[in-house]
Image: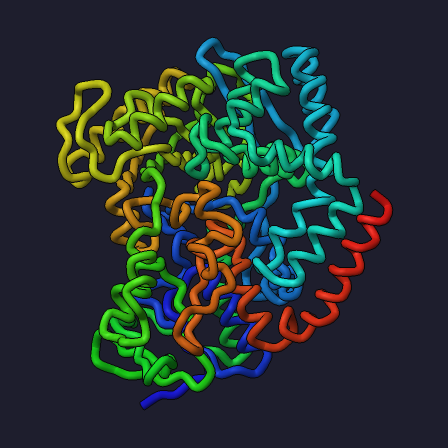
Length: 549
């Protein structure tokens, strides 16, 4: 029987970060992954033909590059094969009449384009950018902190002190807005309003969802300031480098190893049982990078350590609309109607307008296949030409938002049924929409790969119902409510059992932060060691602020 200090279930980005941090500290760590490759939603493969590397699901690495672990290990990761591919043309929105709103990694170039588009929109953009700078000082540090902790209190009070109470509350009002409200408040044209709302549909923030403006507010300006980064040669190069790093630190990564049960003695986790019957014991803890229902009602299904109340909460954890992925290989760049330079942007957003995105979101949550889905079109070979032979180009198309179990088709063309039967027909609808914005595109398609919501769930059980971000991010299930009140600290009711991943704070995206926060705590280099100082510091900051105010 094998015994480790820590056993980690699942091999997603949070697991890899946690394993590396724990192994570096001297812990004996083993990752157990059910698939033949680790990486979770971060995968790449030659699905479009030999020599054509496509990121299968997630692609943008900006959040990962902000992880403290990456800051610590970036030199090692480069030596192990990971190289960032960066672009200063992060995203744009295109429209039916050939117009485009373009955001560059050059602020003045972005402003010049907006001035030409609409002086009123430029004024709103400048004003909102000023609010973003205040947000960065006052609230963004919370994203990189566990929640709730004494550190959270300290960051909140220090952030409030930096910008003042009134500005803090103004910024708070912005992040609590819907994307429609935010666009209407700051912008004049329907094109600029769409720029904000499209970012909302990267998550499950339909234009009318309260607090749906938080993520779009950040992304709109963060990508302008930082550009956008992919993994050169494909996402798999980052995954391979992380695995090599873990092994260099003495950790073990095992694939084709499905965990079917977490073993407990009383209220304490003691190890895991694999599908082949093998038992691996854990001296210090078991870390599950899963969804709440999979943890509490499947892996702990036989355990008496979990009461009915917890099992019920896990079963009620909510998932958002589904995602489909359509990958295209082209023999020429996409012929965008909005101009030849659109081919150089990493993301091309196609809503087109706020009302269209609102209709798409509403149709999806009501069970209808949207007549015109929102498209997030990635152009990875524009940022990283090494992903395909010379003259070949790749489109990475994320189709948002879709119902997992459709009951109707808003366009009346597709008979609802299994996604296995519908996916190619719906992908045709996606390509038809692309053709409207890039006339002649169909003539350049040399290969196509379609991954339905059901395919996403089959590949990664954490993508329940094809939800590509691992659970709804509406405010009732975010911050200290993720996955529920009392569950955001990564601890579970079972001693020495922890939950990380997209279903925990700070949520989905390739941030790896729940893995970092937990492992930082477990190695004794984080909140546990600093909590007294943080509490005192937080209290003193509150007192000082109240005096000044």
